[in-house]
Amino acid sequence: MSLNERLQEYKARQEAGEVPPITSAHLEVIYREAEALAASGAEDRVLKVGDPFPSFELPDENGDVVSSADLLSRGPLAVVFYRGIWCDYCNFELEALEEVYPQIQALGAELVAVSPVTMPNLRAAIRRNKISYRILSDRGNAYAARFNLTYTMNQDLLDVWGSFGMDFSQINGDDSNSMTMPGVFLADRDGVLRFASAYARHWQRTEPADLIAAIERLSLDHAAQS
Image (cartoon, rainbow, N blue to C red; front, top):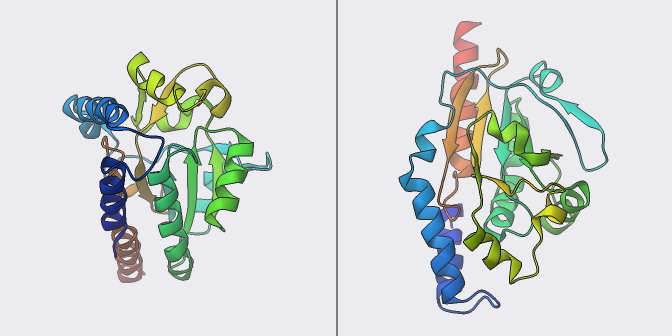
């Protein structure tokens, strides 16, 4: 089963009321806001293939700074943006990426995931999803904003999450109410984007197989130029 098939199966379970405490009233608000984000053209504003890859120096779950320059000195780099451990769709995606991580490494590439959540929440995601790749903290979505992935959650959406006891000033460690669209980007060693994919509708995600295919194409291009 593909990642998106798993996500659609889970979405159907939510809509059938099989995933409490979320209700049809909650989903109505969540879907409405996601569709409005999509209708705004948010996906079209995201960085595209051929654009320069924004560099980063971000802390991991232990506070150790990870540098994109260091990672790119070794090979291509895939960066996955996700919302947080509170997002079940994100957890499915992290698990699916863990399944293909050995393939990514075998192709000479590296993978990191980036989220606005605090370091304790990064550690929780690593434990829950048994992640072996690096997960980095992007406080305030400052790095995600450089990819044009960010938006501000409105009060209706905040009220839905608040009804579940979720306080994003605690989850993300800031009061911006900023959120990132999920996205996957691949940079070559020259710092140029060779794959770019993002979704305003958070129940849709990039298939790991598509990322693997992009890394394989990059490897073939590199071999042809050698």
